[in-house]
Image (cartoon, rainbow, N blue to C red; front, side):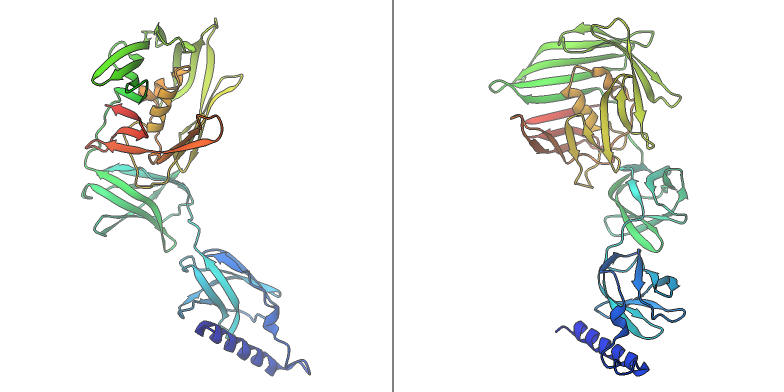
Length: 436
């Protein structure tokens, strides 16, 4: 029998003896009032606990005693004739505790305390910040007085006061904060919570424009098949998707589609080499912030354009592209990361895997290379009109199996340039390259 169990046994016997002294006639030697005390088996730190028992005196004091003898005083919220409600201190470590009523020196029973639940949900921390600028952290549950804490690789801590915003909190990144990677926490209610495992602070954010995306895959024999999107911001703006066969150092252009933007703002298919695209002409309506809200598309075989509505969530992430008759694309997110795009699932298991905050989203780049039938979906991405990116880089993607049944998971690997921009995303013998 452990020391803790022996102590509890002795305390229970003493409690029973104390109650016996009050007398209950001939039953006094067998009746224990605390036997009617009901506690839940477990609760989280910070949660309220209901104790059912009718023996509490006025103003009871409740404490949780750990196995090493450390006590945590609980806040008693309500006392009634049939019991009371107390709140476990949020800083209470997980473990097994004896619940004590201190006023009458009674042990009410044992409860398991589980780790506290983080107060903020939907947490989205930028992967990169610039010195001297205002930074924004999104999330529901932040409180006034919340403090953001940065910890560098040497363990030095830097605390920043915050302001409440409509979607979370903001704070100033000091100009004297050294460039580098930091672990980020937020602290409120006397408890420190993890926010991000890696946030990069830059002296100056380098902005690069996307010029081309290449996708390479095994082809016939030792040859490779390369599919490219080229983006030209010159006048006129031109978008070209091309297919090459690559053998050694030789690239052979097989076929291409080209879209040119006219003076009227319409993109028109001027070379239809693939003969796969449904989209012959397209025009984008943008709001005052430059966000696409509608696209009018002339679809092959139609005499009139179809209007597609672009819908965003409260955080500005695109969730649906739909015509009046049907949804065309739906997108799903978790904690600021794009998780489902058409029939592909993206997993985010590495909190340290981040892109430069100004870099284009790799998922959008990958998906633009996977389908040529509705390219109008991706033009805002190529042109920099849709800048929302996932908080992390995906660590793996899950795609339908080539066999037709089940799914296949592909872990993803990345290379970066000196400014933290992803230059390639690869898996097996496949890769997507980003050229700026």
